[in-house]
Amino acid sequence: TQAEVNQNLAERNSPEELCFDVAVTDCYPSPDAYDDMDFPEHVSTFVFPDGCRPSQRQQPPSFFTFVLTSANGQRLYGAAMHVYDDQMDTENIRNVIADSGYTVPLPWWLHNEPVPPTSGQKGPSEVVYIPKCLAILSHYPFFDIWRRFLTQLYRITIVEAPLPIERYIANFVSE
Image (cartoon, rainbow, N blue to C red; front, side):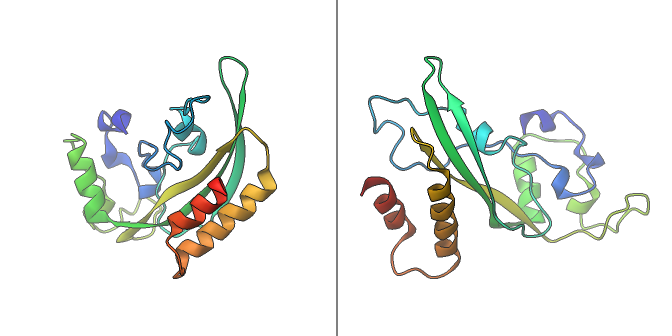
C-alpha cells in the first residue's frame, strides 16, 4: 500500500505481513447500468476489511456478508467470498514493490536468503497466493442463495466448464 511505501519493509518476516491496496477490477453489470443506484466506490474496503494480505499457502474459500447504508438510509446487502487461487512468485512481488516507488531495503525472504535464526520463520516460499474476492450486491438479503451461488461459481472456475464464467454470472444476474 502507499502507507507501506513509506515504511521499512525489511522488517517484515513473511509475505503475510504485507498489505496490498484493494480495488474493484471487474463488475457485472457495469457500475453505471442502473440509474436508480450509484455503485458504492468504497465497496472494496468492505470486501477486504483487513486489507489484501497474501498467504504462503493456498487457503480455503471463506464467505461473509455485510450491509452498506447510503446517506439517504437505503440499504445495500452484500455477500463476499475470498479465494486464494492466484499465485505470484517472489520475483513478481519484488517488481510490484519496486514499481510502487519503494527504494529502501527489501525483506530477507524476497532475496531468497537463509532464514534469520531470530525470525522463528520457516524458509521462504517461492510462490505466494494472492486473495481475490467474488462479491454480490443487492437490495435484497438473500444470503443463503448467494453463498450457494458463489460456492458454485468458485467450483466452476477451478474445473473446465462448458461455458465461459461470464455466462454463468449473466444468467444469475439477468435471467
